[in-house]
Length: 89
Image (cartoon, rainbow, N blue to C red; front, side, top):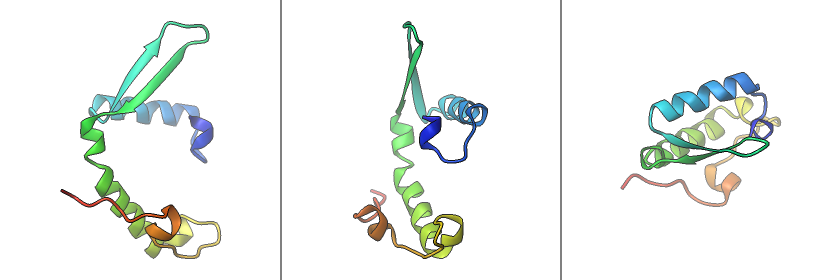
């Protein structure tokens, strides 16, 4: 997982995963295998944050592209992901 998150080190990733598990946003399942394997899944509480996180992402992509994109060019959520953001129900 650490390879898929640009610029994060293993210790920081482990800390954030523990925090999200403690807060009930994700669940952790470990397997007694060699090598050890761990899987994480998003809980209902975590899924409830999806629309909020997507709106924050859309805002940042459009108004602060220099912190999101290497080319610093603003994009809409739809341009980048090919769909509109999820709305609160």
